[in-house]
Length: 126
Length: 492
Image (cartoon, rainbow over all chains, first blue to last red; front, side, top):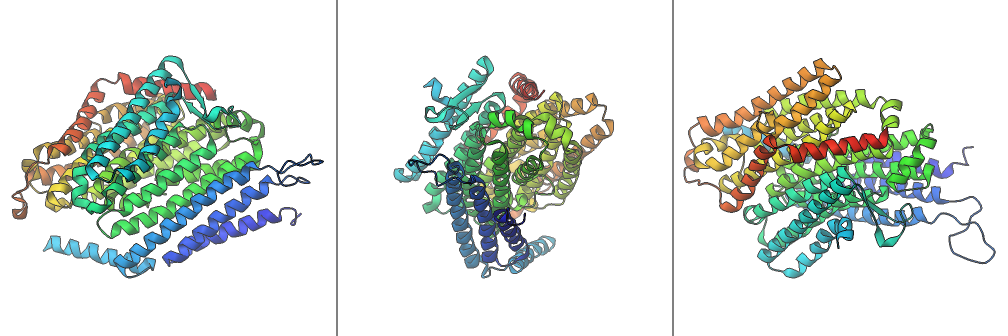
């Protein structure tokens, strides 16, 4: 029973750990890593559901009548490209954030922003 | 040519984006983007006419038949949305060049237009397509370019806002992807129309329930529905003003469209509203959203942020109309999508003009601006009145329909709450009016003049649309009502 759904357990484990990293980590790069793990779990999910029991790779050949479903593979190829683009964009934003704030820790950035906000408020009162 | 309109709608801005890179001259790229967006607008008008005259248009990409190939399916609902998106995009672009001068370094202007057109492509694609996976792809095209556009803002907070939006947006999009995967697993199809026919057979299964949950939560993240709205205020505040005007008017509407499309067309009305207490949940969250966001808006000192919170509140109204799940309720939501695009487009463009002259939109710096920039401030005031829902503006029309829908159901207490919510809008709009018209101008602002024509024309086009569609409601109400009826026609 447990082993039957092995792929799904892997998917859920990866999905939850990815999401947890995104939420719990304060380091911006680690968040992006978590996001990538989260997305990867979905790729595995799509690919596992394409498997047809007893089916081979979807390449036409003599004597084979049952093939796995190739469509999810193709879909996921697109999703992988999207994932890479997201990761690349996220990391380049982190580079810019590091240049602008001198930090890639969430709480330090938030602190700097709050400080800037309260200073501008003080100016107004004065 | 006419037969290919559905794909032209998406492909024109898509092809225009890389061409921008080759044109090299900023002025030329700007004109070219206006032409591309204008063509998309023209296509959307033709599509709407065609749909209103002869019903649903189905377009098969590459000639592959529908459930196997990708189908673009234009009905009244998405023809209406295409019109809103491409129209606003075109009007906003007119002001882009002047506004960018002061907000983005010169060497990045061309990239700005490329991203802008890609983002437009994504939004039009989401709306035009009839294929669930295609929705995800276009969603990511529009989102990725949106993150980059927001990151172009000239303050460092823009980067941080863009990063936060990226994290939230990607989680939302991935949720939608999971939902689509689960649906595919159960039905073996990705075509929305096909899905709507096959899902009822398996609707008792927990997988479909999970698919529904993932899709709805994912869409609500994109929609910035309370309490998933946290990415929105900063993203709108720190993005370049033109980007804010464009996104505030269109981006959340696209997500509302997806919500309607998935609940009504794909999963079907009876599944969405009878199996799951969607009505109660959305009604409650919509109302709380209106009050929390409007109250937050009252306390903001940055006017862009103030209107960003007001946007979240306006989404609340759309959600309340949606949650009624009646024809009138849905009409109110669709109308409010159209009307809100006009109001927020006008307001954020006017704020872009203020930023162009004053440098920022801190409430204190707007002192006395009513006399120095009369036309710009008047636009903000009319936009504000429309937000409140004063008669003769578009805001009144959609609030009126929302109230009618509530009273039709006999839900007086909620109708009263909606009116109270509008009172909160009076407060935050009044704060701006008070500062702009009843305070002495700041010394440092004494040399400020009215905004240039390149701002005033697009702003006033939208303001006049605000008033025109408040009086002559044939187009907006007509199409919204027809679209709502056809959604129920499919569902019931």
